[in-house]
Image 1 (spheres, rainbow, N blue to C red):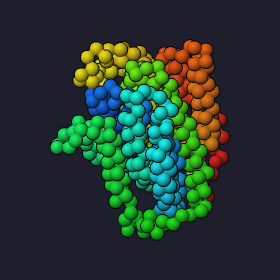
Image 2: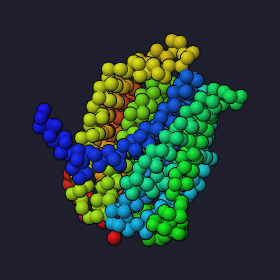
Image 3: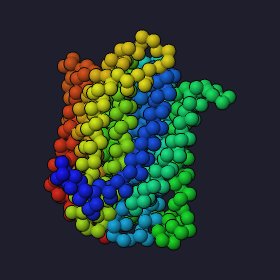
Image 4: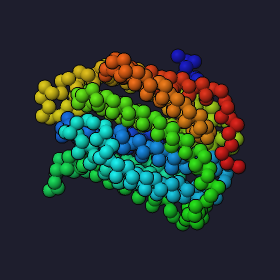
Length: 462
């Protein structure tokens, strides 16, 4: 016990130890927690509105996140570019790097407009039944129309995150969440004299939160003081060399996000074909998982930032110390969470019981409790994914990340599910077992790549 306390104290105060990771990571974890709370609030209020609404929001939200998170992975990679310029002490390049992300985000908003137009044929193809079709289309279109503000928020956050100044990001996200929660209630149920909007109200509340967050961050960024030191106003032009750097490293990052998100979205669609109760139980289990997992993506951003700064200084061994500290912290968080999923599945599912569900929710509840066992199984592997993929991302090893996520998505998720369907063995439990194995194998490959140290030789900036 004394030895453990001594080791903890040493790593706490050591360079790139627990304290340094928490200094950068805690505000980002709080930011992600607040953003996750926005999504959780949508689902929670909708689950009390109707079972159809929560089923439709889960499916439409998962599909909507495919283009949005893909573009965010590309545009938001500006944070790593800024981190490396900061580590290399090239502060005059920070503003121009930020603007490359802004132009990419505005272009991404146009891309999301195309998905708005494709909503109806997309959800007709998904075939979740006529009761869900119109609600899915409505929710998807609202999120697509407002998605440009989601992308701008990611870019503006990257300005602070890349420099290791993360409190402004936390403040913006928390205040946006404080605004979003009452708007969810008012818009969905029609309070304060407004009409009852149902699932559309959840979409409007979410987009309002995105707009508010991006405006708060923009006001903190585009000041004369920042322009003097970081060229945030003078550097507005499209810079061919810098934009190519963003594309070279950010495009594989966005494509990696696409592969992972589309795999999960496709999984949700396949589960939806097993019936409404299976889809509702899966959506609730994944929502609960998201509530505890998404905040840890703030830790991923912290790892990528500190790794990027270390690589900008050309000191990869400093990046390794960051990764070790973060891995300890991630596992310490995920272990009790996994235990809670196993022990308290029933109370967690009861949070989503509609007020007028009666006996119709019993099957959803019992199924969801079992699904949380699968979530507990792969959650521990996901804690390793958070750390190792974050470190590789910060080093610029995005092409290999893309290959890992694409390969595991195809060979460990898509093909096994198709094989189960072909053999007539597809069931809710067999599909969820495949999902769990997929996450575990992904974690193993990420760890092997990290430990190979081949990322040490990558140079993103001069």
